Length: 294
Image (cartoon, rainbow, N blue to C red):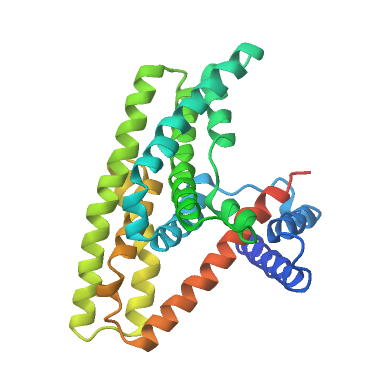
């Protein structure tokens, strides 16, 4: 019951932040959300409150990354894939390694694995933050698309690096070479599984439509459960569930012509449902950091 109350309060805080932003849009929405999270910390129910990381990744981050992946243009993605690879993989890893080693040199009492975990947190460019900061900035379309796509994968690569570094710290068995191997397997394995399973889900949804099962009670729950199922499948294979849902989202985005065979009414309901879910989950992501333990 305590978890239920806390989730309701997080959603209420998100709604209040949206109300303030609607009336005073000159201040970024993120600041309102963090401020509401700070106010929540004053309530007894949020004293020493913590949300299980697995639940947070599965129920909050996975749907958001899937939604962002769906909004990625297939043509722009193919054109900027080299930039994405260099920025989201090589540059992100190199930056995390340099920051991790520098932190360990400055604070030798902190284990190297923990330094890499901290570096993985501060290194990535968050895709949601990028959209928030650049919404009023006029950028060339190619640059904007490339940076948005890069931030999407950069965010995912940071999560993979953090999980690997944290696992090494907990186990006490840290090896840079083994960690790099595990990162590459988790990263590219997640992309491969997400692409394959995402394609299967697109075909399954198309089959439902062809069999006249394109009703809101079928398509909407199917759409919502898709990123959760793909995340769990990828994690079961020891690969990144986050990168899997990003890849699946891109597959869905490039197959919009097939998915739009669904009736217009169901398309509108699905789009509206995802819009509400995305808004609430984005709010929860930024309300939680504002809430601190007493």
